[in-house]
Amino acid sequence: MRLDVGPGGAQPVAGDALQRKGAEPYMVPLMQGLVDHGYFSAVTLNREHGRVQDNAAVTIRYVQPVRDSRGRIFGAIVLNADMTRLFGAVTPHLAPDHRLHIVTDSGDHITLGPEGPENTLRFHGAPDFQPLDWPGAGHALSAEGQRFDAGGIVAHALTQPMQGAAGPMPLTVVVTTPLASLLAPVHDLLKHTVVLSVLAGALAPALSFAVWRLTTRPIKPLLALTEQALSRHASGKAVALDTTGDAINDLKGSLVAVLDNLSEASDRARAMFQGTADGVMMVRRDGTLTDINPSALAMFGYRPDDTVTLEMLVPPESRIAHRALVHEADIGPQGRRMAGTRPIHGVRADGSTFPIEITISPVDYRGETQFVAMIRDISIRAATEAEREALIADLGRAKADLERSNDELNSFAYVASHDLKAPLRVIDNASRWLEEDLGETLDEDSLENIGLMRSRVARMERLLDDLLIHSRIGRDDRVHAPVDGDELMAAVRGLTNPPEGFTIEFDESLSRISLPRMPIQNVLLNLVSNAIKHHDRTDGSVRVSVEETPRAYIFTVADDGPGIAPEYHERIFGMFTTLRPRDQVEGSGMGLAMVRKTLVTVGGEIALTSAPGKGSRFVVTWPRAAAPVAAQPDKAA
Image: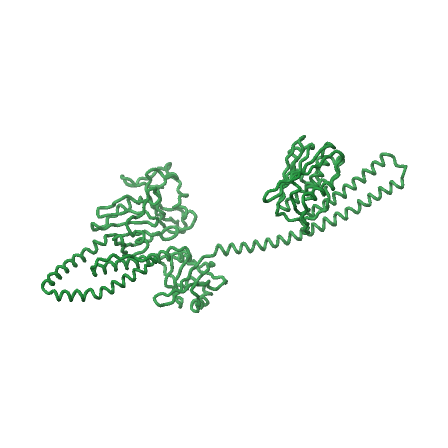
């Protein structure tokens, strides 16, 4: 339900014109269950249907939760107020030269004179917004009480906190008047005094001179003292004092300047105390809490008007030890952390505890040593550290499990390869014995079958060897000495067996590099061997080159063979994979699988560019920082 108030009074809004307001910023604290009491919203421009309309009113809202018979919140009453009309309705009784300024915590302000508002409400979010522009306005808003400013304005500020969703929202009322107006009666009195003095002087010059001497003599040392006080301005800069030769007027001006200096220093200290994000407390040696800033109150869950003692902020079981720490404190001028590295907990108003960090520093306050405690809520940090420690423990367990699994896998691969080779050797020996025993009785088909059986046995042995090599990739800690590119090319060429007429070319760029022989030698050997084995011509060619970058060597192995269809570009890197029948090509199908695993282990990459009839081009990215992760046999699968 919504009521709009206009010239004709309150009118209900039709149902089809109602809007959803649950996501508006002023409703979010209530909708999320963050508050259970009435509160004022921030001052904003009014929005209709989620948008700020032209000439939107500057609005403040009061949200009052509505409860059912069981005390549960089921809705809210929201009062919208046009700030310009609200403040403009104020009718203070002001003297002609007095002004009343109303200022929100966001800086929105309006100025009222004897006849009413002198300007429209200045909204802080408006493009042409300007803060209060009379001299000393910023200082007057930061502290209550009178303030004399060099601009000749006397201000008196009164701050009234309003309940917001996240805490108090100060509303400040400042009354200003020119200093000259306040001092006008004094000047009139001085003028009359001067006239009387002149008349008296005409009758008794000697008496007048004596009175003048007696009056001004004690003023001059006082004036000198005020000048000395002004020379020690809180900012560190000397303050110039205009003198007229008139001791009384000079004393008046110097006293005003001294008050201004002291007020500025007080304002600055209060602003620092009130505005710091950390909690700040002042405590006597006996544990009496003498002052506490808003951040500390909010941290412990108290309101500004709550009466708080130090005992209320410390867990019961720690109060005696805490009093001893404060009473027996031996703190240097730089301060120290309370309780060292031991954890400290505070108690919130609701009784819950939370971890805090306290730094204590001594201060001399009116001849008494007190302690300033800087308090920081480290709940998030403590939770993060606990999470990190748990993660480290999990990683340690995972590492141990992985090492155990790798050891088991290595043992299994070794035992399996050796145990499986034993029956293969028996089969090979048995075939040879059959051939020797039967001799010439074997026909051509039988001899072909025996030869085929031996080739299958040899292939199985190669497959088991490659399987063992694959399982050991990345598990050998031996360090290999660097070799230059010429030696690497010679090793790869010597380990291949190309058919007559086949060409292996090594680009001259390879002669300029130097890196550990293993495992890059086996990577290049497998790629070159694959290019030879899977070529469709005996007069084909394969070319190896390298490009150096600041972070890696980029090797390219390109051939002019039959090429590989795109649908097989990923499949060929699987274990035991060949694109041609086993009877047509000798190999275990493990070569490219070992190449990829090696590159993954060192943080490298391999990419393939190929198409049927256009050859194949493998690009290997080998990091310069790659450690030699494996010492593998000089063999290609």
